[in-house]
Length: 206
Image 1 (cartoon, rainbow, N blue to C red):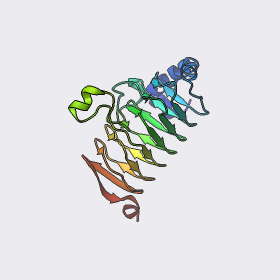
Image 2 (cartoon, helix red, strand yellow; image 1 turned 90 degrees about the vertical axis):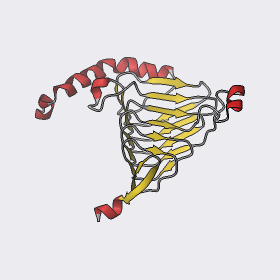
Image 3 (cartoon, rainbow, N blue to C red; image 1 turned 135 degrees about the vertical axis):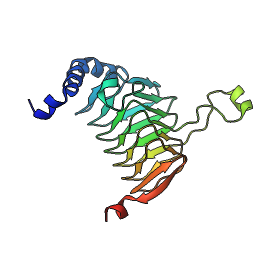
Image 4 (spheres, one colour; image 1 turned 180 degrees about the vertical axis):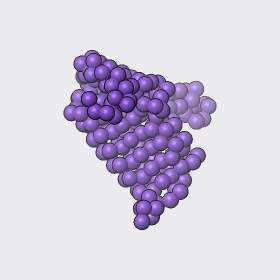
């Protein structure tokens, strides 16, 4: 057995549980109409809320960590993947990873390849409820929606909020605890509430 595994016994137990649960988790996804792809590593059962007339397309190499012990950050709750209404689309590319947290699509959320989401972050393309109290009384679920796009190789830190209508450019990093309310260009570090560009990753490396 590799030495690093002997030095980190919790990884052994996490993977044993993952392998034992895999047949049930596979059936769980298939029952929700979600195709199971190669290389998935699912730790604990996520929560799937999929409208029957919506689409969830999750790419190969998916890693979802819903169990408390599967990441030192600690999942506050299972990963929640949700499509709220007919026609909603959640599309995730290859090698996506997330611990706890929520992805909620009322319209469309598109996530590229090799994207990592820190523990307990939330991505939503909807306001859920109208801002105006009169409209909220007439239609409590009638909040505005706008597509969210997260491009390839993005890293989002723990406890972030990614809100409607936002595009995060390729290779960018969002600092922990940030609230992203506007587009973030490619190749930068952004942080804060609301998130603002701090510096270019390319300039920092040069």
